[in-house]
Image (cartoon, rainbow, N blue to C red; front, top):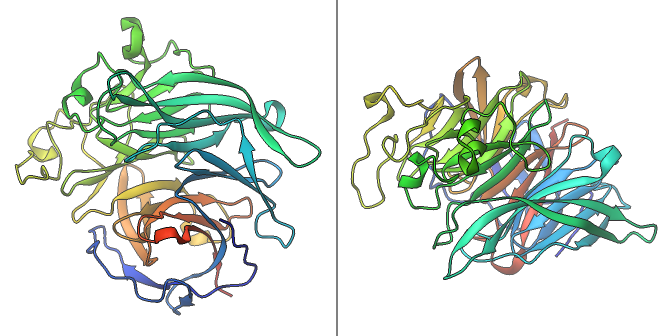
Length: 395
């Protein structure tokens, strides 16, 4: 479903909340009608609906202006020149079959750093195994858009898999980012199995670092052990649903905690982040998990939230349209239905502002001109689709 819009449409009341580093309640009701947008004066942006998609999960801008959007059910969509009257919507063919269900399906998508020369895309998805098992995978392919405007993935090659595949359909993670030096980083959730996050014999509950062809770099902290252990860059993670490099080149993740304790983490080579031994949240059945400060040998989060924000993704903002936000984290909130701004000062992170978007936000991305683009999660919107929104400064 695609409904282009080139003027500010009515939709949600967007209200800025005072952020002081502590989370606000994450159960605020929507403050307006679902099909109309009223921007209050305290918000520094206006939002424009640019289309609707079926369970959108991720997006990326390509050199030349094309926007790609993944739909969880297994469809890859493109918009040529989004935000212009000539914007054209289409479907990219050649996506492999995905194992759709629960939290699984078609996931993240990023372009190779040299995409302008090699046309390579990297995308994550969930694939089925034997005996009702499931696991995330990452593939690369060449994007071929012909003269007639049709686009297809060519030479699809799976270069990484979660090992082992396990039962259940949750906590895949499977976010992707390229480092400034060209290495491929992938977040791998612990698949709701807890203990694998502390077991270096598998790659669940970890951040992995690979070369762009899926091979293991010699500089990985456990490279000498071989096998999947050699892939691991850090471990003790629960469900990292955002992974991004700061302007200074350091890697950060944003992760869903259990009942409380969502985390923003500065990722260190070989670091152990403690899950499930420690967490600033508790088990869903009420059982206590010791806090990070009880076990200083584990790396504590730079920022944590209770009540949770349920992060979907995040970016470091580097554009010029919102100069006050340069170098800050902008995080997508699901249960919090919010866009959350976090100020970064060295190793310290502090929530600075929270904007109530009225709907679950799955993904945030920066456009080529510095505008901020959001994908709504479709969970609470029935059959109307998840909206693609463009945020630009108020004039």
